[in-house]
Length: 396
Ligand code: PLP
Image 1 (cartoon, rainbow, N blue to C red):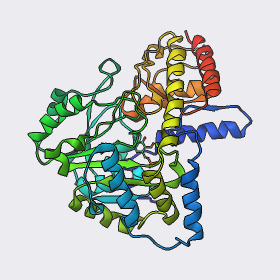
Image 2 (image 1 turned 135 degrees about the horizontal axis):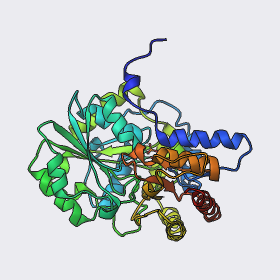
Image 3 (image 1 turned 60 degrees about the vertical axis):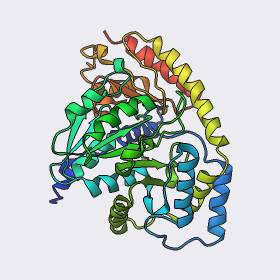
Image 4 (image 1 turned 120 degrees about the vertical axis):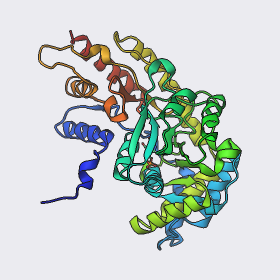
């Protein structure tokens, strides 16, 4: 069958591929520990679940407005004021089926054929693929472990050309855990001031999972705020990945453009999940903070465990729930049967030998590294890293 050329332009998410391979091994009775997936291993907080149950009983069962219920968009504005001291109106908000759809909307809304989107590496797997779907061109800015995986203003300036349409980044970053301070953002903003046509897409979905202190949004810089698009959602901070609620906060014209696209793709997202979203954004944040406390303990422990393994160089993540160590010292080594030549080989070796799933750095634009999640219980983390250590010791 002749399928469209669009399908040739992009790859399926490596994160989902690894999770699928892990599931297949598990179906064969093998005890695979999953360090590949990017979601909290906690249940959605009780008060959020109760508001969904109430929404079902109150018959919120009809189509919803394309950009989301007004009360949810008001709740997003409330959250942006409460947590980020940012003023937005409901007309600036578009709620989508996950932040992934928010990102798809915004990229399709702003990027034309051949236009460039500057993305620091490592980046979330989906960014580059969405740009390719939009027929744009990804311009990578390389960072590495020694710089804490952050770009400098000079690197940003160097990457900008007359074709640059947008800059896209996440802070806290998936996969590196890098978090930009206000001072570091200020440095980038000074460059953006010279290029008034560049749209800045700021993915803040890991906002609450921050071990370094305050979350800083680049939209706080008032003179560029109208061209910043904040992307956020409930998946990570409220353990609501399956509910599929993401949103943007943007200039009203950009929001309208996203609404137009979404009106043809999906319409408004699930009515019940939206009602639950109001509770998440307006009520008690304690369950979120308790979850972050647990991530803090796991982060400490995983950093101790990884230090015990020779040849792995790991920077300390300031946010999100991943470590992204450099593993390239293992390239060229073999256990007598399998030779490791890339981060993909490294992950497959760990999956087959240690029965631990992880995600190759190539998928995030950094072939020297591998992403390991710590969104798993402490006993599972202990066991996974014991197995990883033993498997890597066999490589000579
Ligand atoms: N942005 C980043 C950096 C992510 O890691 C993810 C999920 O893994 C998303 C966006 C999308 O989140 P969702 O579609 O679940 O809201």
